Amino acid sequence: MSLTIPKAELTGVFLESLSYGVYLMVFNQCMVVLRKRHSRPSDYLVGTAVSLFILVTAHLVIDIVRNMEAFTSNMSTANYPTSYYGQFDTWKNIVKSALYVAVTLISDAFILYRSFIVWGRSYLIATIPFLLFLADIAIGVFWVYTLSLILPGENVFADALSVRVKTFYSITLAMNVMCTSLIAFKIWRIQRAVAPFTKGNEYDLSRLVAIIVESGSVYSALLVVMIATYTSNSPAMFIFLNTMSPIIGIVFSSVIVRVGLGLSHGDSHHVKNSHSGTRHRWTVRASARPTASDQIYSTSNLGPFPEGGVQVSLSQTVHTHIDGFPSGEADVEGDASTADFKSEGFHAV
Image (tube, rainbow, N blue to C red; front, side):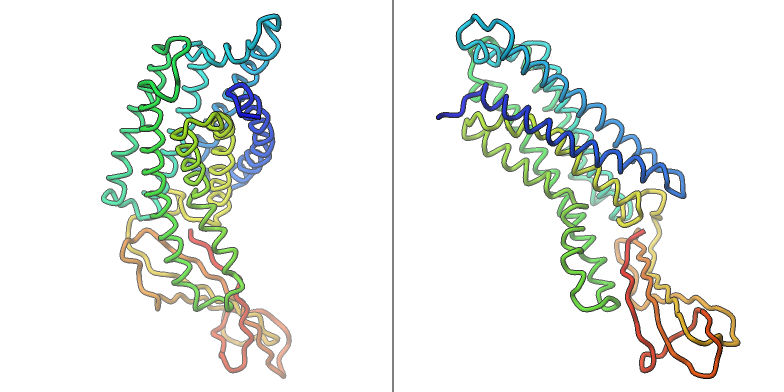
């Protein structure tokens, strides 16, 4: 049984609804995290989260309405769903495409700005992605405009619209791969720098997951699938096109959650443009109460990051056992020969 455009649209709306349910949970967690932050939430975090939610919700509503009209109205007309989805110049289809382009541009702007922040507000790093982003805006506008010029019966995979759609996806993919690689490399460098202060390889999997989630690489992978299905003239493209909006919301809301919790780097409230070294805080729990007052010291033996803008906070608990003193807690410098070190992990702030 061959896959037709109506079947692809119907399947896409079903999967979009399921993905939207997952997105609702992630979005709720995102807003809870931002609302409970000790510091004032960044405007761009809140703005990105709310804007994506409004656009993704509107996209789903339009898809459901179009789906209902295609399969429930004019049922006396033979193959009406095929005729309905063959009309690309309807206002509902134009609004749907405009919403998808808007969701894509907001997510692109978010990952662009985040790579800019992660790399210490380096304009040199952000120059090429920013130019690609401007090109994406222009092509996206042309895409939506071209829909109004499509005549009934024209092949959506072969006309001028096809060229602009492929160009839009290609530019978006190029920008996302570039920003994804920059963010992933920066996170990897941070993790490598603090690796000597953590236990063995027990955090390798969590570090890999963090890089995948925070860099938005899932979105880049989906863009590759979108381009492949569209280039091969497969109706399966409509399945991915419909489900892409809530998936974009899931991916980037997850990133916002990690940034809001302070588990990830990318919040302008916590990033400075100056070069900063790596700070380590050692907290010692001992069965003795020394006479000296509590001490917290910082080290910078890892050296500053050349790009600047990154500060790593590494907390480590040291357990010691000293006889002859009452139990207590202090911040002291532990001796490696008599202390049991327990790494609590790290995060970039």
